[in-house]
Image 1 (cartoon, rainbow, N blue to C red):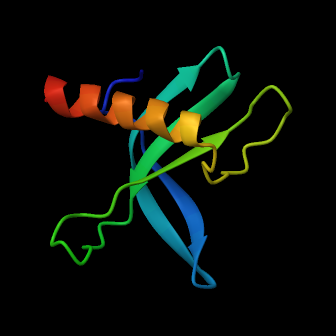
Image 2 (tube, rainbow, N blue to C red):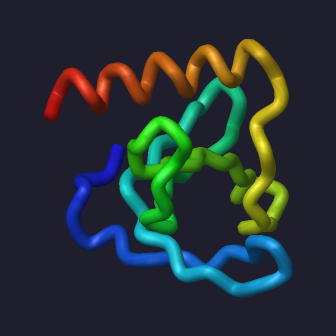
Length: 89
């Protein structure tokens, strides 16, 4: 996992508009051969907390396009990583 500093920003499309987001963390799952990125647009959710998004991408197939995580096993793995990040802070 990369350090939380020097990760920069990414631009995503949200509701038809380009939005700059701060990259919070990245990590790789070698078994799935996918990379994951956590980021925020600093919006606040209904629960009063900052919205954090996690997407995956696959450098091996030559695309940096962010994809939603829809597989339950993958979602569970990401939740475990997020819990590890929260515990280490």
